[in-house]
Length: 456
Image: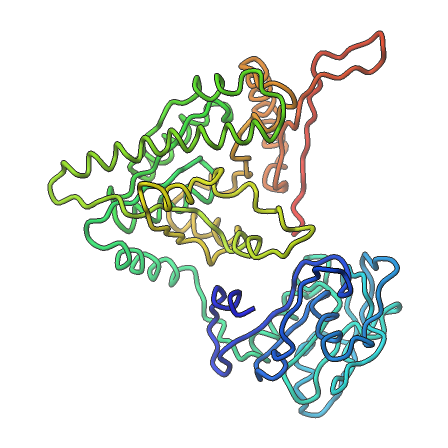
């Protein structure tokens, strides 16, 4: 837990540390390998909020008889009744200003059956007697609901109460301050001569990170776009137009389409395709990085290539801290098939810089607007690193890539015309494949289109 808290810095005025236990764990505290924390956290004297499994874990650590193993998941929306203790007691602060009832979302397996010693009940539902608990004298709280999602009314207010009224954090963070401070930090960190390289894809994260580095150190940042031949229609030209012409980023485009498609020829197994794409990407990127390094050596007053830019977000850090279990493989799509590890641990021995690592996606979009990035790019949907290849079941051929690319373009154009693009988080074709419907009938190619609305 200490390692996690080293990553999470917050502006406190009273406490040195704040702990929020929200593991994303869908099972039981009794499961083998279930995440645990040291019971000594109760003696730290710092604010502590257990959410869902975190609430059950708090009660279980005090006495395992407080928690009964669940027989079925309680999943869905329900009405929460808030119980006021009254007086000047701190236990009412979590739901301060919320009212007496609240529509919330719950998703848990185990159930609190006894109130932990020293705690009082602060919330309940029809099926959950102890939906919210608070320690009578310590700033320790547990809730069975999920305040972090939109299905819970006023969830942001609950979290805000914990941060400001209980933890005494000052809500003084503003994007304008972040931009100025981050540019100063980057300049100080990198110095006056060192060069930075980074992979860009045309996505929101890499574009915002690239623009920030350009703002901080100018042409000492080298953006590299590898054209895999698996990108969306006219994507390379669009990235070039955006980064080079509109944002003045020092961009190099590496044409690798023939190499990628050649190595993928005849390959059917999905993980084999992922590995080939990742390794090929790294080969081309590393070759270009070496070229930039050689040029720097022969340029007067130019420093060495010492840094590698990664568009890591705060959500990526959370995912990388996941415990063994249902969410353990969530980060498999990051790091472009191991590119940062190879650049840092191989011959180059580069240091990693992650200027967006304290931001969530909506904050990155706001940051991009402030840096002058066009709204169309700021609101662009995510696209898988392996590109169109990962959307094709079976062999990746130029013909199939072309079909999916055109279908994606047509579909995206249609939902934009209908005013639906910004209402979805992902849209496009998914996994075309050969399908035999009956013994005497074969559909040559099936194309599935999907449009996914965001959770929030």
